[in-house]
Image (cartoon, rainbow, N blue to C red):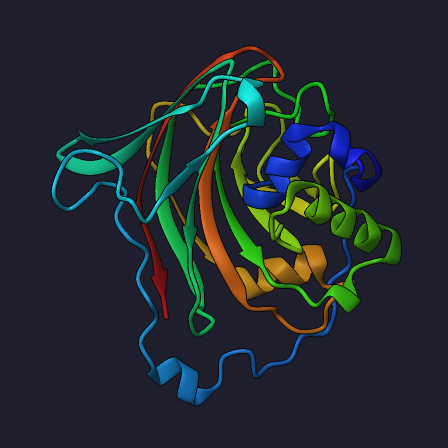
Length: 262
């Protein structure tokens, strides 16, 4: 859904808060000084583990959000031990949910994690509104300068902020595991162009196996938002999620070792 109808779509509003028209966005010329020497020498604030240090519950650093007014059940997020390692289990059942971790610090070089899809959403189609679900996603939110955003999208974003009384992110980049499209597929979310995605594991990846990912966030931002911004904006949050409320399906996946590398 476009920004013009965002007030009528609670899912679109939550997507702007926490997550991820197919279109190839040209790469802009980015400054080579995104990471300068002084930044590289400073420590990068770590992402909190998914499990609470004092119990098996979710770490309070990760905030759970769903659709307002009970529009869909919450996706289940549970820290578990799998293959002898602590990981996050993400289970959706016609549900929606996102875990968001606020984050600010010197711009890191790469975001690393590993994930495993156990039960895919075969009916999902990330290029359509009706099929806009994802069994596994990792998203990065940016404080993109408002002046860089196209004027009509800017107006819709301001309207959404007024209506929701929330400071919605200006730009969100989502990494997906998808069961319909191959790795490398990318574009804009069908509900809002302020959320853009890259499929990292797709039809070519067997389910039930761990896959490791290491992403240069600045390069991916340039690929998807470089037409608008010539420099990497500050990162404000990291989110992980799974949803199947549009297709009314079920999914199961696991995520672990989510961390920054300087």
